[in-house]
Image (cartoon, rainbow, N blue to C red; front, side, top):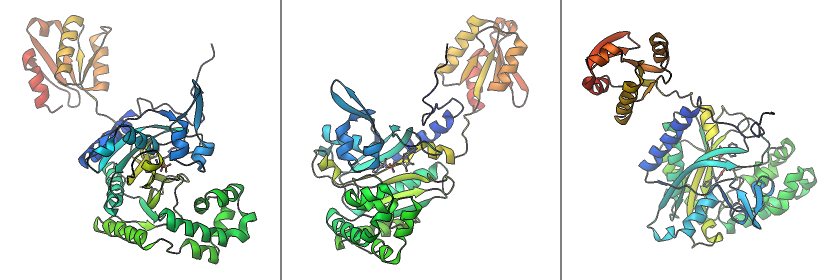
Length: 416
Ligand code: HAM
């Protein structure tokens, strides 16, 4: 029979040899987010297609080119390409606006985007992220950025670049888009086909085009002057200044990148990305920002919000490989009845223990024990007859014989 294999383009198994690294970053997320008052939320992996079309924006690449959409019972459904829209949907549907603000939620899980697979970019990938609802003040933006940095530090990533920008509010942004279009008009025919479409539909997205010819146009003095202008209104300006002030107080190093516009349509005011020099072209480990209109656009009450998400595969590729410690103990015995009882008692006491299910020879079992465990618990017929057990420290090759009822305490004292 022919073998069935994974859909290799952009999907991957996470194997037992890698899982300790996943547990490490997941446990750290639980700890760091819980310490800051966030509660985990788990939303469905597929949602109504309209949620993403309205939420993420129907001019974005994600919605236009990258969604896994399918029909079921005459409904159009989509595997979530990101989780902000789903969390907002859940916030509205479950009446979370009635809770006292801020409502702080975090999540982890798989996302799906039909992108061209390459290093750091998969079609099924995982994100860990947070969303905070109900705070319009710049403290929330600074808290989100500092939470991201704290989490990255917690998993040992200290050498990363934080980039921030402000996209202003719909009013000041409109004016900016107009100016941008005006100055780019003479170059329209020289822009890449995608940028020509963006010029009409979403001119802000022109700024993060990666095509060299387009990048060169954005470097032209008259274009650069518009891009680097401080276009935002006084309120948005003050908001951004406060975010920067708070980041300075928190000693978070950042640079302002005027080209940072993000690939999703829901943002206003602060946007940010955290990048690593060790990731090649897909160098963003984290992306986020403020999105004050999304809750209303998806049918909820007017609610300010801010959040971010990180690509977990990218995090894993940056941290040293984690390896869980060995088993605490391995029972070496040919008496299966006594072994079953002992293993069950020790596991119930929280001791990590395993045993040989096939009653192999003692020497074979000892060999296996020294590969897998810190201690071998030797239960020979003599020991059983005398109510005793021999405990061999496999690292130091030292052995003691104890009464069986002293074993648990002995193992705990060994600080297994
Ligand atoms: P995003 O920038 O599209 O933002 O994704 C966030 C992060 O997910 C990226 O920085 C990257 O690390 C990772 N990522 C994205 N696409 C892929 C892929 N194809 N393969 C591997 N990793 C990937 C969002 O998704 C927003 N929902 C973030 C947000 C939350 N904004 C506000 N709240």
